[in-house]
Length: 359
Image (cartoon, rainbow, N blue to C red):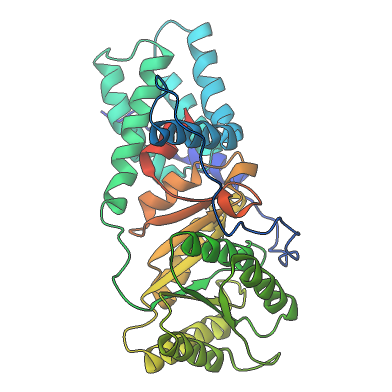
């Protein structure tokens, strides 16, 4: 029998936890060090040292764990405290754990599905300490989010056209600059398209990032038709033999019907310029918005068909559980997570690595 008898209580806990702040305009990008054009030669390996790849993997894992400290504290402190004050898990204590997960913004429905296998293990007396409880939660989370990430290979297209969308203030333009640096580091020929034509600062930001990353950019005059800019950008990228095209778009609330229609127009223009494009449509979300992010994702997906998501500001929030909630509620993979200000802080999302860092 399910132990979730107090769904109303859980929903109230979620409502109290939702971020109700209005969307803010994105600030101008802060100056950062230029992206290096070449790697320095690595020092010789010591004979008994582990391979460089293993050291790098361990270093990245530790860095991710450090960046997720706020969310990890929200999850782990109650788990540790519970076993200090109680000798066994009961139905009431599982409800306390449910509220802890909701505090980390995993959402009521996600938590209900997540806790079902955990409750089953508790009933079978298979969980007797905090280590076993964390292991059970880790396994349950991976079972929820792994399926959507099993086949997330990018389409084999040249140029690969990626349209990036999102509401105001999520760090969309800065994220595009970091994506450009990421692809350039992989040896790709990258072009940025400045289709956010109604905010002069957005075009200037994108030009700065293009210069830093050493990639090309297509822009028109201020207040030009965004769809026309997208059309010309895709055409130019195809003519110049680019590998990747990333199209910036104006920030808009997911409830603004006219602006959402504009995104559809941009998509149609891309398709006219290069049939089948844009091949990817990525939604940028601020992790601090919590469950509001799920609503944003659903409405953008209904309007234009989102194929991937990028969560920014994950390092500055205690709501990192939103990653689990989005994966549960949306059949769309998370492509990247933002863990800081630098270009290298935009990390490709790896489900197992992320969940391990939560505990």
